[in-house]
Every structure is written in C-alpha cells, then in structure tokens.
Length: 205
Image (tube, rainbow, N blue to C red; front, top):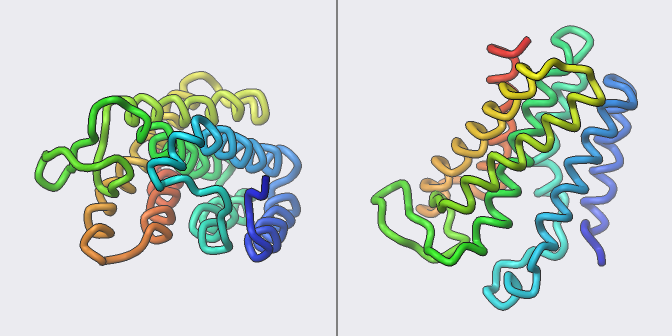
C-alpha cells in the first residue's frame, strides 16, 4: 500500500530532515507517530469508506505540506520556544485526521455548523458525535506519546489535547468556507495545525 505519492515522499523526507536537525530525534519520532496514527485511522474500515467514495489511499505533496509545514516551522523555532507548540500543532493534525477518517463511519449523519442541518458524511464544516469523540481521542493519544518522549507533565498533556481539539474545530469552521469554494482542504489543514500550535505557544509554554 502506497501512503504517499512520489512528491509527497520527497517533501516528507525533506521536512523530516529539518525536524531532526533543529528539534532532534524526539521531534522526529513524534512526527512519525502522527504519520502512523494517520495511516491507522485512514486504513480503519477502508472498504466501507471506499464504497462511500471518500477513501484517500494515497496522498500527495499538497497534503504533506498543509499538515507538515507548521510543525516543521515550530520544530525549527524550538530552540527558542520549546517543544510544546510543536506537540500541540501535531495534536491538532492528529485530532483532525481521526475526526475525518473515523467520524464518517458513524450511523447518524453529521450536522453542518452553518445551518445545523444533516449532511452527507465527508462534508466539510460538519460534525458528528463519533467524529467529536475520535477528535478528542486522536489529540489525547498524541499528547500521551509526547508525555513519554518529552517528559511533559500530565497537565500539559491535557492542555495539548485541548489545543489539538480546538485546532480540529477551527478546521471544521473553515470547512464551511471550503464548501462554498473559498479555500481548499489544504487551507483548512494548515489552519488546523496553526491554531493548535498557536494555542500551544500562548497557553502551554
């Protein structure tokens, strides 16, 4: 199974090198953990998602850039701002991945935040119960991994999880504009990681 196309692989390796050089091995391991969690979430019940027409079996450089640019920037700045913004940014992208990949599998239809009406699974700007739970789980799992890698305290794990969830929620809000043709999935992904990192910088240092 190919997870990334050629352009995606090249960009991911380039970002990985930057993260390793400026952050260190722990930063790289956390980034790889996000990638593995994303693969697991994507592959989960993939046959069902394939039948629904929303299964993304291979991602390109645009997806890598939108999800990885902000964590890479924060890793580059980590000697000055510490690891928490980087962790929070990755928690947000993990949260969003879990929400979108697992949320579509719920029995009930998601509800659009624009008008609170039910919409089909996979619609940007919508939330479901299972998607919300999955979002919290994804952010928390990433925070727990960071707990062992960076020795952050339990309070920081909780705050990282919250930052990740709000990053994912921001993605959903901007998804409303995406549905109207304003911006793309890449735009909302970047906003998601940026909001998570910003919360990490402002409140968790």
